[in-house]
Structures are given as structure tokens and as C-alpha cells.
Length: 140
Image (spheres, rainbow, N blue to C red):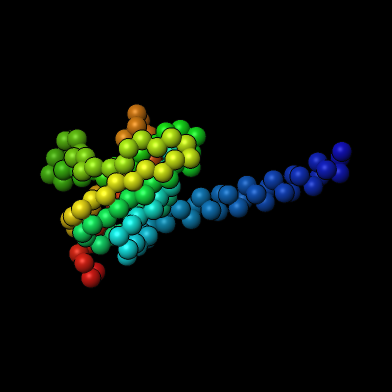
């Protein structure tokens, strides 16, 4: 038994380091660029992966897979740039996805601009389940 314990400790340390490195890489400043008409994301406690996305204007289908243990959804909201105290405008999003389920939503004509992507269930946004969606002009 002592031999098994001595092998497990270094293995657990390596796994912890690898997980921390992978998590740190998720916070990079450069958004993931999506050139197709479909954005695929994973929802977990309490994050959206990828969390910063850049897409072209126009039609966009969002496919959100819940890989977590709680229910989640994904909505696109626009904040009022002149009145930061005003609640954001919800432009639409997926229905609620149970653990292991996928939910979709299609925007027919998403205009260029900066948006937030959030889970609107209870306080998930406050717990960190949000990201940024940049919609750029076609050809950019």
C-alpha cells in the first residue's frame, strides 16, 4: 500500500498542474474567431467555453452543450453604452439545457457590435458564466 501512495502523489500533482495550465489558457485576451455561421460552446459551472468570440455579422446559429451538473442556457445581451446602470437588453438565446443536453438558437441578422454572452439562470452570470461576443462587419 505505501508504494501505491507514493506513485499517486506525484501523479495527482502533475494532473493538478495540467488542469491549472489549461484553465489559465482559457483567459487569453484574443477572442476565438468563428468564420462559419455556427458557434458551438460548452456551458459548465460557471463558465462558457470559449468565453470570448468574434463572428461575422448576419445569420448565426448558437449550439450550446451543457457539460456541467446544473441547468444552463446562453443568451446574447447588449448593454446600454450611455447608461451603465440600465439593465442590458436580452436579444435572445437558447432555452434551458439540462446536464448533457444541447440547446440551440438562431439569430437571423445579428448586427456588428460588442455583446455579452451570459447564462441567465439565477446568479450564474454573477458567478462568472459570461463572455464577450464581437460581431464584425462581413469581410473583417
